[in-house]
Image: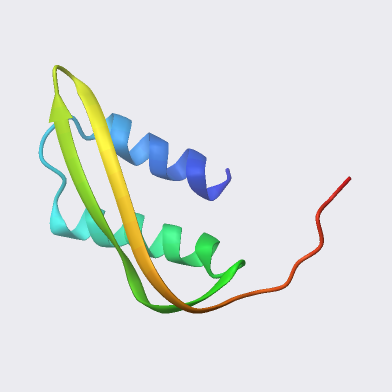
Length: 73
């Protein structure tokens, strides 16, 4: 299971307010993925809102550097 599938499963399973522990797990998963492309300064921040059963997730993070990587063809 990839990181984004895991995050999606966590969000779908928890229809109530996300607990601090769950939020920390989600942010760590995102940090692990973002670290492939950036040198992060700390963990990402997440704003999660739900309106009419639809979640809006906003992520923000700071990075010291964008890593060089090759584009797959």
